[in-house]
Every structure is written in structure tokens, then in C-alpha cells.
Length: 318
Length: 175
Image 1 (cartoon, rainbow over the protein chains, first blue to last red):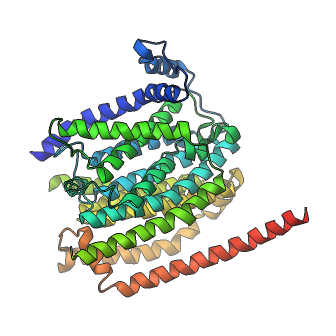
Image 2 (cartoon, rainbow over the protein chains, first blue to last red):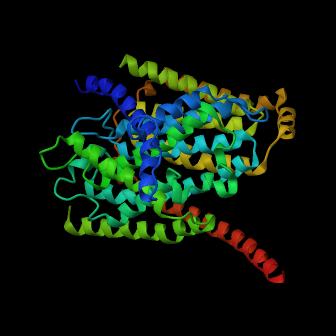
Image 3 (tube, each protein chain N blue to C red):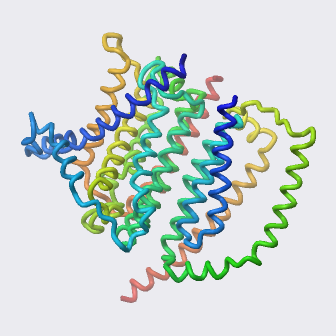
């Protein structure tokens, strides 16, 4: 019975997530326009909402060019690895009670595994492009993502200690009394920062910093392959927001007047908007500042958080 | 059950062929990509054997962190066409004799084990909690030894890095 529901869910989840990722392009530009006191795209369709259709026509009709000096096979496969890794991550997200593709007993680790595999897309596209800007972007992203993966994993361990399980449905159910962002506030802050760094979104988008690396790891990409890289980036924003909702803000839990799935979507949308606000509000740090923030501040904070959480849980005798 | 067996054989075939390609590729980055594929296939096999925790850690740690560092080094070294030629020269047939003989020994052992009464494993699922209790109970000493090894490498890396930083600072002071 459960397995049938899971198979039926795969297609809607895939389509829903892909369509939201595509529309985020327009939503992001409109929101940025709003926060920066300008209009943003408003010409195509009502309020510019068909901008994404125009963008897609542009990307599809562009020359899908592979540079002659590139490593052809890896160059073509790398954008796929970015998008596929992120899409796999959605398999364990609980959208509502019983509304998930699979409720793995190591669901949280599965999510971490899939985000860590998405590094390869960035790294290999940088390597295969055979271009110095792309290579520098790839190197930066490798160091940045390996670094921030450490805190991402450690910041979640507090949640695991409080829940006593790696299963994401159990994590949500354990938050019935109190959402975890209260007892795990330090973990929440570190996870948001690490999520931004893993998605290489603007304050931490040094792998593609346009002021010094033209476009970083995707300098050589054009047409639909570039589109796929962009979709992968928006997918990772949605996935990070969905995970923040699930792990720290009670997932589908909420007052009864709205169905659980709507609560989940509203909370996720809020965090997506927050990610976009970060882009509008915060300047980009220098690369060494990014690294020292990670190792000198975030690592001690997560370790202390883990220690205190463990001590409290032990002290309560749970 | 039959479905699991099919999945197992597919994963095993992917793993074996990917690993063979790791050895025979002359382009270092291609070899590394095949090694990642091989690790992923092994993770699938762990999952099928009832060890989801080991399977997740295989991907997070081996495929997700260690291989990224390998790839990082390959990117730094800038191995071009020359190194492909060099690798091709090293990969001559006589090199296969030693590993071939050792693998034959392992293969005979495996054949003997599969034929004998020890062929059946217990086949129970090992959940994350049990792995944790084992690691921090009877195997605590091994965990601590591994962490001391990591500490030593950390101190070593810090030492090397500090010498480099000091040299650079003096250079900057001279200018």
C-alpha cells in the first residue's frame, strides 16, 4: 500500500519541484526588484510571470556549444550531476504526514549524501571546461563545499540527538510540542549559513564570483546546459529551505485550519524568500574570510552546541 | 526477493566494470570519476545487505569528501596530454602478472567459501543505533586510535601550512 503511494508521488514531486525551480527565476528577480526599489521583469504576461517562458525559448534556441578544448563527455554530464543530485535529495523530504517518496531510517544522512554528491557537478564542470576561470571556480567550490559540509552535518546532529532517529518523519513528529529552532537555535543558524554556502548563493557565491572569475565554473556553458546548472542552483535553494522547514520549523505541523501540505509549502516559501533577501542584503566576503568564518567560528559553535545538547539530553535521562 | 537479487547483480556489475576502468584509464580525472561510480555501486550493495547506515556513510565520507579531495589534487596538478602518454607507457602487460596472481588466490578462497557451509550470512538489518553502540562500546579503542591518527595529520598539515605562511609574510615585509 505504502509503496504504491510512493510510486504515484514520484512524478508529481519531480514536476512540482522542477516547475517551482523554474518559476523561482522570475520570483527571485521580482523580489530583488522590490527590495532594491526597482521594478524587475514585468513585460511578459501578467506581472511578468511568463518571463520564464521567454527565457526558456531563448535558452532552447541558443547554440548548444561545447568548446573544442573541453573534455567533452564530462563537460556534458556535469550539469546533469548537479540537477540529479539535488532532485534525489527530495526523495526523503516529508511533504505531509505519510506524504513522502521514501521514509528511510537514514533519511537525514541520505540528504547529506546527495548534497555532497552535487559538489561533483560543480567540480567536474570546472575541470572539464579546461579554462582557468572555470578551474579556479571549481577549486574554490571544492574547498568551500567540503568545508561547509562538515558544519552542515554537525549542526544537524543536535536535532538527531533530540529526536533519537535519522528518519525525517520522526524528526517532524518529535517537534509536536516545540519546534527545534528554539532548543537548537545555534544549529539552526549554522545550518542556514552552511545551506547558503552549499547552494553557493550570493553572499557565498565565490565559485562563480563574476567580478573576479567572469562566471566561475560555468563560464564555458551556454544554452540548455547553462539552464540546467541554473535549475540545479534553484533546486538546491528549494531543498535547503525544505530541510530548514523539516528540521527546525516543524515540517508539516501547524494549526488545523490549513492542511499539512499547505503549512509545509508556506514555511518553505518563507525560507526561499529569506534566501533571496540574503542575496539582496549582504555583500560578498573575501575567500579567506569565508574560510576563517567556517573553521574559526562555525566549527566551535557547532561542537559546543552538540556537547550542550548531549549533556542536556543525558541529564534529563531521556 | 528476486527484485533485490536483480538489483544486486546490476550494482555488482557496475561496481566491477567501473573498478576495472579505474585501473585501465590513462586520464587521471576519468579514472577518478569511475572510482566515484564504483563507490556508489558499493553503497547500493551495502544498502541491499541491510546496512543502510554504512551505505549512507560510504557516500557521505568516501564519495562525498575523500574523492573530492582527490579530484582537488588532480585539478591542482594540471595533468595534460603528456601524463596520459606517460600512464600509457606504464600500463604494459607484464605489470598485470603480480596483481593477477594475488587476485587468483582471493578468487579461489571465495569459490571455496561459497561452496562450503559458511556461504550464508545472517542477513539481518544493522540499524544506525546498533552501529553506534558497537563503535562506542567494544570498539572504543579503535575509534580513539583513528581520531589520534587524524589529529596527527591535522597537526602535520598545520605545521606545513604555517611554514609557508611565515615565508610569505617575510617576503611581504621585505617588499
